Image 1 (spheres, helix red, strand yellow):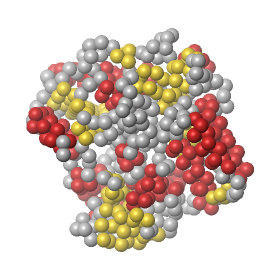
Image 2 (image 1 turned 60 degrees about the vertical axis):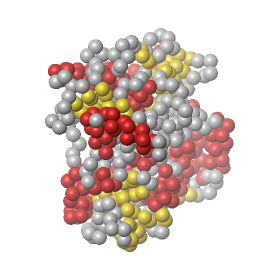
Image 3 (image 1 turned 135 degrees about the vertical axis):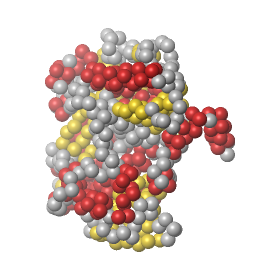
Length: 519
């Protein structure tokens, strides 16, 4: 699935010279007729095109929810109240590729207009911590735990904000990973409130309670303080690194014999225009990498797809074929389907499909008795395409690092690789449903009366994996290894360190983990 939305931990993604303005949406009032028109338009979009509207919620229950929501739009409402209603509906679909934003220029607004909390926070173990202090005051330091905002506990705030975040099924790790920094500040502003001053309660590194009143700031203003405030110096040096020029990198560490480290920031980023180009570019990189591994007689390969938000499906499939243990071809997707083949639909003009693709839609889909349409996987039959292992594939021991931001294409790769026992999985639950999500192509449209932006997928994915014990959960690691704030403050990588121990002393590490699980 092509990625669509990603918040980086990095601080340099926005300009520093923004000038404050006013958020016109904060005073905008929507009339019942306008909200009803937008809601019915959105409902038609979902019912006519969304392949997974009823994936987690039975049709009768979802229809009742839609009817109930429509009945509440009978009096004027502030813009952000209606936006919350739309966001809650899309959140209830439980699809990581179904989301809404208040307007087209939300990024620019966040940088220069919206006054939000001036601290960059991150979450671990159901707690929120400061990573960067975005004020000029040096009282609050990285590692301070944020306890409350304007009298509300962080536990209550997290529960409120999780309600509106888009995630597959019932996965919590993706919410935890996403609800940090810029996105936390935005979500608080959009869904809880827009105070002029934030009354904040912290727990210091020594355990003392610290109270701070911090004026709301635009992110552009907070960013200047984050970069200038001396308390952030070490964290900025460690975590404000520029985006790498190449999204895929192979390292051979000097400190670990016969071992290589393959880092994949995402599946894409090379200017590829279609899946075929994506395959060509990725295959070139992987062939070169495999040749180097063979030349150096590498026995252990660490593959890092943490915080890989996805991209081209075809690149995820390619990676799998370079790591397969099976000597025979296996399926990757059991089935992909749509609920419409009507390329003349008024909604298709808002899709990312080219005009040529839209004209060819019916040729790519096979009608089914249940009203769905199976996507052809490279043949004229309903049979899933099978993928053979590469002749030059890596045949040694594979270790795969994963977390809640391993999403979309990365989560599909993790699921299929896990089902086919490609390697040892270390880290945290992935950010995409094990059995599959939704994506491929997307509709991006604006609700005409309110201007709210909506994105929905067109294709339902069923990965070629066994039926999970728990529907709507991500791929689970063989060795769960969480990250804590202490790891961040000391710039240590617990997942990578665990794999290093596995390689150096496999029997002892495995034994320790089994003992831990037995407690």
